[in-house]
Image (cartoon, rainbow, N blue to C red; front, top):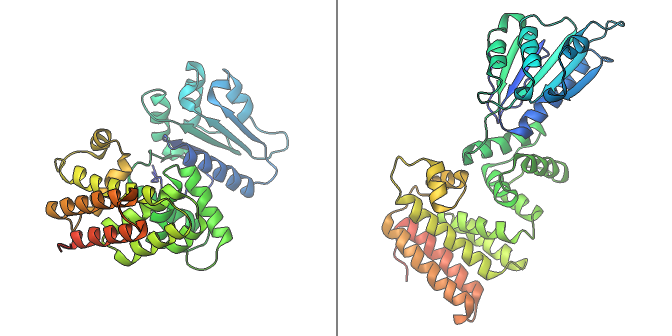
Amino acid sequence: MAARTAVNPPPTEVVPVTLLVGEEEFLVDRAVRDLIAAARDAAPGGDVHDLDASALGPGELDSLTSPSLFGSECVLAVRSAQNAGKEVAAELARYVKNPAPDVVLILTHAGGARGKELLAAVKGAKAAGARMMEYPKVTRFSERLDFIRTEFRRAGRRADDGAARALLDAVGSDLRELAAACDQLAADTDGLIDEPVVARYYRGRAEATGFTVADRAVEGHLAQALEQLRWALATGVSPVLICSALAQGVRLLGRVGSAPRGASSAALAAEVGAPPWKIDRVRQQLRGWHPNGIARALHAVAEADAQVKGEATSAAYALERAVRRIVASRAGDDPN
């Protein structure tokens, strides 16, 4: 069986039976739409039935897949097959082993033990034209970056890694929202999509902007961090929010860096109160850091926090100094 990873576009080849398995609802839904469209392109004018398995009664499968009087191809999408009744589940399992001609059956299944007989039936029906595609939950930071890159390729556009990271910071981890954002950026911008393009487009997302400054600083990109900082301040982002993001970024370095090397992202996420994809990202950012450097960076952020809350005449200067000290701490310098 051909199994596709979540970040790859689904195949559009029309086969008699396709089972889409996984919890990533957006990707499964889109795969269903793409496969229906491909089937209709291959045989225009056919009927399309799209229903939930729980609404399918005993004997209805035979009715829906019986030959049409006009000889046109039928597309039947049965969603949430794990919710099918016992008799219907048995009918589906029998059907996939001997699918009807001129019918394209698309099944979705959330995975797990419920309805596992159907999964086994599809796996054993490859010779009959059945295939299974898997869409596991996207949880890792790197997987979301891959997803964003793939979305831009689907739209016929090029985007660099900085743009993918900035978009993830600005929009969050929901794939449906990320896909919509990629489509919008592809439609509204020209040329290479890079980090400044994303930053300009998402002007006003104060929290995301602060975390972008923090990410560039802890990664050692001084010029980019200062550019983002000045842009954020110029567009009215509160210095307190930016300082809070810097503090969170450096604290996460310390907490993730001091965790046992074999700790899973999920377990560590629960401990520190951050999503697993953020833990994966912080682990990447830790490269090049030494515990002493993290301690100096924490001290720099603490000083900046006091200054932006009233001890300094220029909050902008205090934040810029903090960013420079964070980057220098990563490099092993010991700034004043």
